[in-house]
Length: 416
Image (cartoon, rainbow, N blue to C red; front, side, top):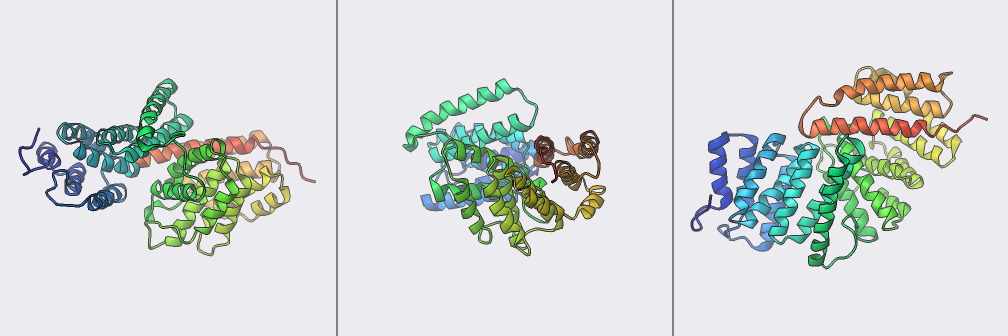
């Protein structure tokens, strides 16, 4: 399928064919938006700056508003290949938007495959920074897959190896050295990670709580591990910079802006806790708890449980007990019987209660039975939905199971 002359771009032709084949679907709407954003033939007479701005707007729309179905994202992969035969720019535009859509609406395998596609399209069009961004996203996804899901480890490592070989060529074009996951120095790195959290977080009235944060937290922990261990970053300086941005962080949720900002801050603190940066995590948890509107009651319970674990890891047992006793356990237990996400927090509470020797006589076996019962109920969420929702539910269950095992492994405290 090729265009003759300047009348129709490859994306406009593809839209006609797609509509004829599949009718009006979320994929059709998506392809129409891509055709509108594209100016590969110069028909719209846009400057390079205007082109970039127009594409960036389309990318944000794809992430936040397109509501494209996972199957449609996969189907549009073939369209990228078709339009790229005649115009690398068309392939680049569509694949860039599809990667953003995979972030917002796709499952993890779709996001991995879309990132590979977007990286390849960007290389073909010689958009080296965009290629790097796509391959970073893919590498993160592969590591999330390996960490939290049953998968073919050899295949994941093979894909990683291929990405890193491609990166060695891309970095020459960018005149960069170092590794693919390297971040800029100091303040620029801090801001880049904050933007990363916002991009990977779902906002809006139907996305409260910690399930919509699961992907953002998992990816940030991966980036933090690299930043702290490979680049020798300073976790306390990082936390101070993040805490200072708590009320100025740009989030796409104007109705509950401060609440949304604090959710992102909690994600940052949780990732610091995950990487063993306990003092840094405490700094952010304290800032969130001091805010009048930073958390709701259940979000506060999550923060207090994790604050407790940070104190405990630092050997500050009395502060850990004080933090833990502030939790509204009765409300948490009552709501755990009604809402699965809260039941997961209740399981974390039980694990914390046991290691702090506040289990009311329960031994480890009894505590494990209570926790396993809660996790069994929460695990019902796995496989209960498609696309990003299904992925987030599976990831959330994996994170909760991992958290609880880590908490119970800490059991060392004996009351005076």
